[in-house]
Image (cartoon, rainbow, N blue to C red; front, side, top):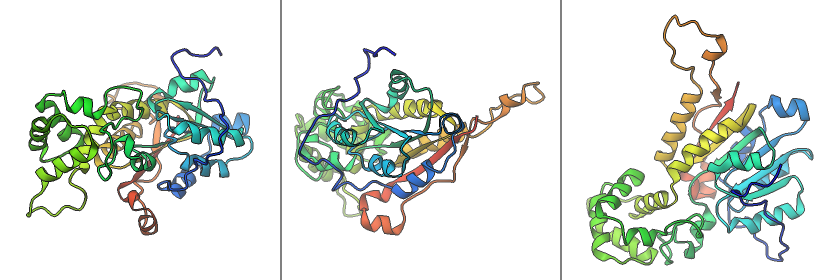
Length: 336
């Protein structure tokens, strides 16, 4: 198959003496992900080829990928993708040591193109670990964290689109308030938007975090988390079009599965989880057809089945990794 000019090429392996392994990154719900993804029996691949092809659609720094590779057979394959260019070096280190692993810098909403580019028709398991990763939060210059001062950026790929500062400093007050409410469910959205417009231009994360803290502070409110949490989440989701990405990722992910293959999605807030839950429910229910309509039996069958319910971290994981506290894992299996 000839290369697709609309897709980035497979990342070449670059030698490096620096270790960019996930020393400080703890993959969330790791044991559950491995158990659920590797216990399926995909008829298309396992029966015909004796091997499996898995996709890590949110590679990050390779936490889940590294552990999956430890449990895959010699004939299995793992394709990882990520839109963040900082993920490339960690991926190159894995690719240099393991021929079962390939990587492409791309959005998971481009999964269909990535697979077609490599001549892959179906895969046996897909993982999507949504939201911002720990390494992105820990690097102040990426602009995701309200706990460290850095440029107000928040882009998953700093080479694409508009930064958070550019948008906040030019957007209409009503548009800012709408984003804060729609993507952050922030009750103080209008007040925060008004103060942002009054304080412009904003340039750093702490400027924004301090502004939100002043607006949201109230002796009557007991805050269990930083008052800027919802605001930062909402702006990040808007800047990176995360809702649209998730819609496409869920659709293309399920379409790419072999019969028996599974799509596992980890979300970190209710907005994402509701979308995943609703999509999986629709895929696991038979279509609504008029009563007494003569149709072939297979047209009334469900394309997928839910694998258990919502899975959340246990006490041991919460103690070891407090950032996992809001994680929810849902899994669907393709049945036809």
